[in-house]
Amino acid sequence: MRPVINVCLMLAFFLAIPIIPFLLLGESFEQDVQAWLQQEREQAAGVLAAAVVGSLASDIFLPIPSSSVVTYAGGVLGLWPATLWSWLGLTVGSSCGFGLSKLLGKPFARRFAESADLEKVEAAASRYGPAILLLSRPLPILAEACVLLFGTTAMTWRQFLLPVIVANLGIAFVYAACGAGFEDQKTLLIATVASGTLPLLVALLIRKRLPTLSLEDDEASAG
Image 1 (cartoon, helix red, strand yellow):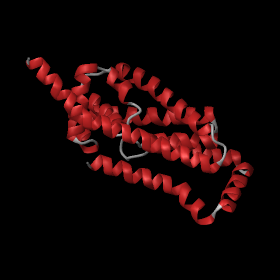
Image 2 (cartoon, helix red, strand yellow; image 1 turned 120 degrees about the vertical axis):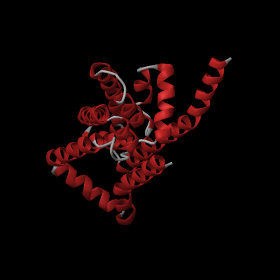
Image 3 (cartoon, one colour; image 1 turned 60 degrees about the vertical axis):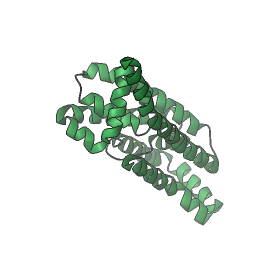
């Protein structure tokens, strides 16, 4: 349960950053922020782009709500800049997790993912093979466990990078597009909340179901 709690806490913290000032200070604060962003657009965009890349690159080590980060970036930076910087951050984070797990082995993988999650992903990988990298990419917790698991196997960098690069590009584009479709700060906050909570709920449902699927497979093979 520790990864689930950590992700929920980090999601709440991340969402509180833009929501709490708006609730406390009201629409005048929102208008002031928008005016400041308009005046300092280039500088603010550079700072936000660096924050997006940095936060997403640390996703393996910290329970960052990556979908919320990308959605909010899409609303502030625009579709294509948010897609580019988010894709870069997601790919750097995935590569770091895979490389360090390949270098340090299973103890490192177990340090940043629960053994139960690694076992569930391993069972799914035995059924779907490397395709599980594509299937798990949009799912919090399971995506990180999948990257760390494959780092402990004989999978090569070429086999790892191709599906991850493609999947990360798709994820970055979809969530950035969700954010870019909302110019109003309040609707952007709603989209940011939804993009963070819905994938987490889906991941928790799949995570709960995986042991049953594995058990059914074992019984089928025994029969």
